[in-house]
Length: 367
Image 1 (cartoon, rainbow, N blue to C red):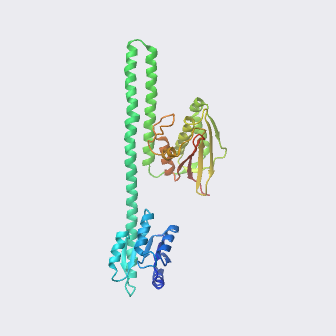
Image 2 (cartoon, rainbow, N blue to C red; image 1 turned 180 degrees about the horizontal axis):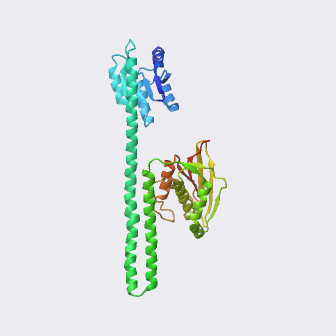
Image 3 (cartoon, one colour; image 1 turned 180 degrees about the vertical axis):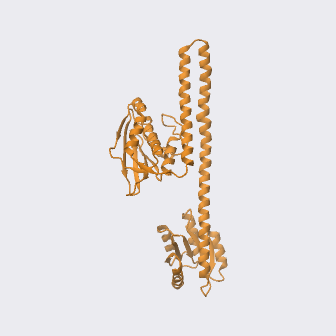
C-alpha cells in the first residue's frame, strides 16, 4: 500500500508537531499549512488523500475552504473537520458543506488514535464512491451507445433492406417483361446493398468484440510490415482512387495486438482515400513520443474538419453529414476503442481546407 498523503490546515503549530510525532508509527506523509488560502494552493499544486482542517483560521474559515474545494474539484480529497469540544455545531455545518467526517479534539490528545481510524474509514468510503462513480459513468456511456446502436440498426440495416425488397420486386417485373438489362442492373444494385449491410454487421461485431474482450496478450509489432499488409489489402481501392501513399521507411515498433492494430490502419488509410483530395496524397509516419509511448499518424490532403467535427469524429455511430461519403459511423469509434484497450489513444488534428492528420498512440517496447 502506498503512504497516505495528509494535508493539515491548522494554525496551532504545536498541535501539528504532536500529530506529526504520533504519525511516525504509520505510513503517512504530512504537509502542514497555517491558513485556508495556503491550503487551497497546496491542493491545486499537489495531490492529497486526506485533508484535516480546523475551522478557526486566519482569513478563510475551514468551512469556507471546504466549500471552495467542492466548487473547483469534481472529487476533492477526503476532508475531516477537526473541532474543539463544544464546537459540534461547526462539525455539522462542515458536513453540510461537504466534509466526509469530523472529530472533536480533547486536551489529552487521545483523539489521535480515533483520528487514524476515521482517516482509514473516510478513505474506504472515498474509494467506494470512486468505484460507484466509475460504474455510473460507464453505465451512462453504455446507455448512450445503445441508443446510438438502435439508430444504427434501425437506419443502416432497415433502409438497405427496403432497397433490397424494392429491387427484388423490380427485377421480378423486368424478368417477366424480358427486360434483361434492367433486371441485371437491379441484381447488381442488390449485390451492392448486401455488401453494405455486411460491412455494417462486421463493424458492429468488431466493435462488440473489442469492447467485451478480456485480457489482451500484447505482442511485438513490426509496423512497417503491418502497414504494407494493409496497403496490399487496399490495392483495389488505391487503384480506384488513384491514390499516392508515402510510408516512412523506419516506423518505430510498439506493443499491441496485431489484428486490432491492422484494423486501425485499415480505417485510417481507407478514410484518407475516401475523404482525401482528388487524387488523394497520403503520408504515413510515426515517432517515439516518450519512453512509454509511440505515436503514429496518417495525413491526407482533403478538405479538413471543423472543430465541431473533430470533437464528434470518434463518437460511436456519429456521422459527419458534411462529408461526401456516408458510412455506418463506427469505423473511427472502433479505432478509438482499440487504441484505449491497448493503452493508447486516438487523435485528430485538422484545419479546414488543409487536410487532416489522424493519429494513435501505443505502448513502447521496454529494453
